Image (cartoon, rainbow, N blue to C red; front, side):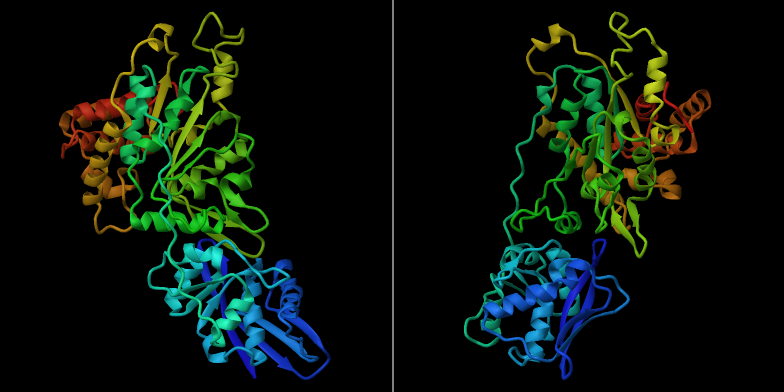
Length: 504
């Protein structure tokens, strides 16, 4: 008779149900795992064998066959250890077959039977809830999985605990959700001396989820400004927190099962590979663009990133998702992030300083920023020059609004957008609006439209650039608490498009 257990196989952020069929039959003794297992899954038989030996359970001198169904779906990861062990114990009539068939399990087995935590417990719990099954997992993963309220989660320290639970010797209590991760200490915007225009651009970017590029000499405060952006953003909604946490769960980044309401702020180094930024590698893990989902991706020294990496950002910026293609699978991850880039005006960094610029000026600036292609530059809604701060300004007391004050205005603008897009799936901020909807919500008054048309003709704006100006103008109006987009809003939005930047 065949015993059944259940687990999941991960395809992006989705956990696909997998049936583990275990049969113990007469024949030449052996232990075979079939159903497109990878190396880690195939090695599960040795870990299961050793774990059962430590429990004084002898392997039968029979043919053991484990089939992972559907057999044509690739199976990767060590989390198949636990369901294979449970299926085998049920096939040996040590555990009740009916009860094991009503569970979904994942976890890696140590040789002594201890359960080792594995990534992906949160999306696995989502699938278990849909299948109306109890989730069995390592105790260290239980707090993470228990955030799915309609799923019963049992977290065990070892395989022995699970056996005792199902044989009635010692009951395992349901796992409790982990604690909300406290918000990290935020840096205050008042710490930045001067740079009022750049601060205003940060506020607009935070309010509408607009992409921003800061161009300025070394030491002008570009990175300092970007580091204060998280303090301006509203906390994640419950739905956004779940979306983001599922990605972080797959990447193994959830600390002790805690879920954070703070928006992600990812800042990869410019030597990062394409797989690190976009996603991929041996197990097609999510990249930085997906880890920044619902948050900020800050790329300092933007032109120093490899050209191929920069060009692959174009499609994720537009679509809000990225597809990682492999020989045997195509995996899609969400990546609705806000891109903030920082760049020097040229290689030496002092193009605008006649006393310090190199002898190749202005060609060095054209060559350096030319590494950012026109189509990619066109995707930045806000382009801001960050001039050097005068030494006399550094001795002045802090000025401007504190981060909390700016965050309150940003939150009010986001609330207006949430009300505007309520009932429309996938639309949360002005940056998401497009087509006819954008024309309706961001239609400027007669003076504003005239200004925008003249600017588009004068500076050769692309259609994409034209619509991005409309989105920014709509956000500026939201910050002002106004329903209509007027000429001053359009004028300010136009001022944040660097005239010297390439348009395409």
